[in-house]
Length: 166
Image 1: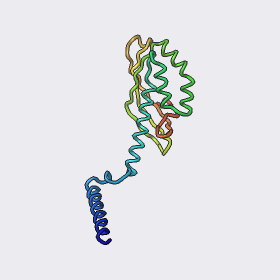
Image 2: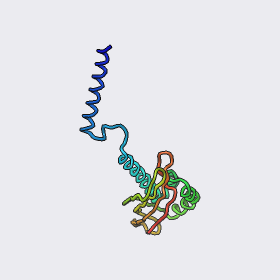
Image 3: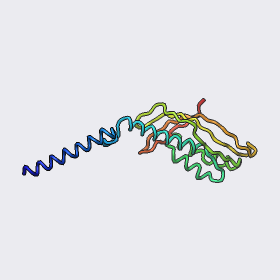
Image 4: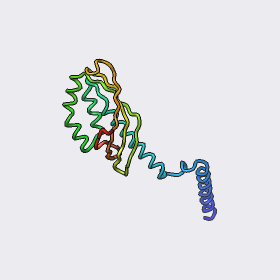
C-alpha cells in the first residue's frame, strides 16, 4: 500500500512540476479559462464584429437582389430597429429598383462607447460607394457616422437602434 501511495504522490508531483513549468513559460495561456482582460477583449471584439457586419449590410444595396440585401440587414437586427426596417422593406425595394441602385458599404472605424453584459453603444464611421440613376452612372463615395444601440441576443450582438449622427 505504501509503495502504491508513493507512486501516486510521485505522479502528482511530476504533473504539478510540468504544469508550473508550462505556466512559468507560457503565463496565463497555461491556465484554464480566460482572464478578465481576455474576456473583455473577446466581448469588445464580438461587439465590433456585430456592428461591422450590420453597418456593411445596412449600407449595401443591389436592386437586382433586394430580398437577399434586406434579409441580411434583418438578420443583424432586433427590437425597434428590426420592426422599423421590416416595415420599410417594400418601399426600400421599390425605390432601389426604380433607381437601379447599387451601393457597396464599408466601415472605416468602430468605437465602442459604453457596454455591459447585454447592451452596448457603438459609433461607426462608414461609407458607401453608390451608383444609381441620380449619379448618372458614376460612382459616388458617401460617408456616414452612425450610432448603434446593440443588444446581446443569445451569443450574438444585434442592432436594436440605429441613428445617423453628426
